[in-house]
Image (cartoon, rainbow, N blue to C red; front, side, top):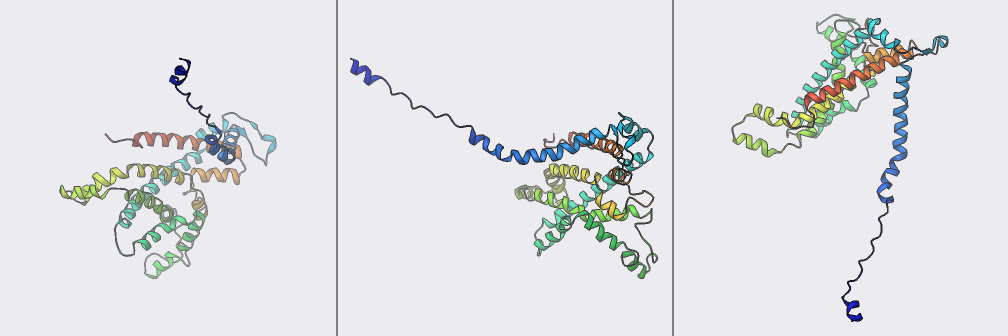
Length: 311
């Protein structure tokens, strides 16, 4: 009987080896040094800006440095007219630039998405301005707007305008001139993102729409635009933030002039810190700009229902 019991007893299951946690943590351990380094480069400047926004800090006047509380913010909102002027111009600059860049970028993306001879060359020419830096872009357009060798001289040769005219020094033409210069570089950004999303639209949808009798316009409104919604929302948000923080192009192109007509809030902050050495007040203005961008971004994403389904 003992032998029968021994035979009937099922064999013990093999012991499972406890999986080591090291392979699961290895990717995080490998990226930890780079992540900590990036966090340090990002966190320290942000924290220091918030800290100096509550200080009076001017290296050229160290005897006045010290804690001032919210005096910098009070001065910005109640005593500094340049703050409101530059903020209004920044809003105008962002609205006009992003709107026109989206319009022309969408048109270019629809064109280069078609099949035609030389499409690869056409795409390369459309996208090439985005590879040019802001400073180099402004240098190119400074030469184009030069009153002696630029566009205005050739227009004067044709009888349009007069010799010696500078669009960048005239308050009535400096804004459109700056808009055109930044459009040249900004439009390809929208064209690239929208084209990438256009290529993921199923051709079956357009074929079904044609069978149902829908024309090109109806296909665009009911198929193309709804599919591009998230790409348009994301690209406009990113570009709006970049245009709001635009300093290099306007600084090199106009220097904020003439008579402060093209001074944005970030450019005013740069002048306050670099030229006036008033880092405390500049930090307060930077904090205000950060709050404005954060608030507008949240409201925009909520209103646009980014990532959600339209009802």
